[in-house]
Amino acid sequence: MGTKAMTDMPGVVVTGASGRMGQMLISLLAESDALQLVGAVERAGHDWIGQDVGVAMGGAPLGVIVADDPLDPFAQAQAVLDFTSPAATLEYAALAAQTRAVHVIGTTGMTADQVAALEPAARHAVIVRAGNMSLGVNLLTVLTRKVAEALDADFDIEVVEAHHRHKVDAPSGTALMLGQAAAEGRGIDLDAHSERGRDGITGARERGAIGFSAIRGGDIVGEHDVIFAADGERVVLRHLATDRRIFARGALKAALWGQDKAPGQYDMIDVLGLT
Image (cartoon, rainbow, N blue to C red; front, side, top):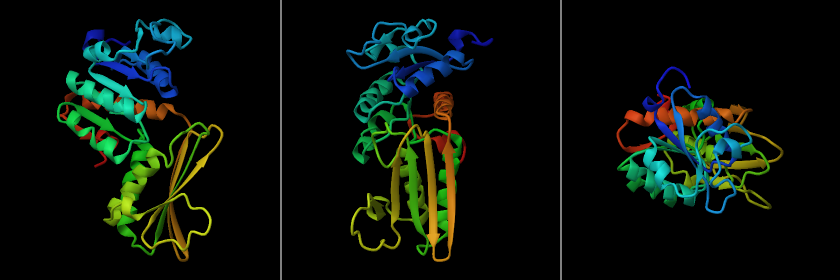
């Protein structure tokens, strides 16, 4: 764990410990010399409950027992890493606020109302929420806003995303983040200017709309294109993710960054200093 004393390092709880991202976060924390794993949480009835999380993952013991009650783990933690479901995330947000832990949210598929419901928690603790935690995607978000600002509505904007066959929500959180950036660049409201799920006789594309297309298949980690298409030319911004660890590394970076920040809602663009 490096030369730094264990007690000097912020303690971290991972929710959804058995999930793909949960296990990746735990593996990275086990190797970290800046953060330490102090808790792992799973839903009630999960067969990992009561087991050492390292053993449950098929490896060496890590000295952390998987719990179904987040209260005690959160009370010991300075940060919570949360890639779960919207309903679970809202429960964890209230608890993280009580314990003043930095709540890093990578959960996707949250509605506008669910995002708004995080606000009371953000008055008491730091929340870092991002549809995507990779450096490259957040840079792409900044570029998307800039290009949308520079090009007028003669350029149609289309966000195309591709993910693995198991992903349950569409468009992806990242696609929506990119669409929001494009809308901000244009000075328009995304909800009022978005086109999704075209099928059949849809009629002509509405001028100024931001379109979304979703592809699902195989083991695609995440691919996002923002296409600006006008008569005679196109500008295409693209990010390809080939390794999920980029998201886990971003989450750890956010947990560290949030330690000395004032309560409030932040995103990865804040963490990376790209504002």
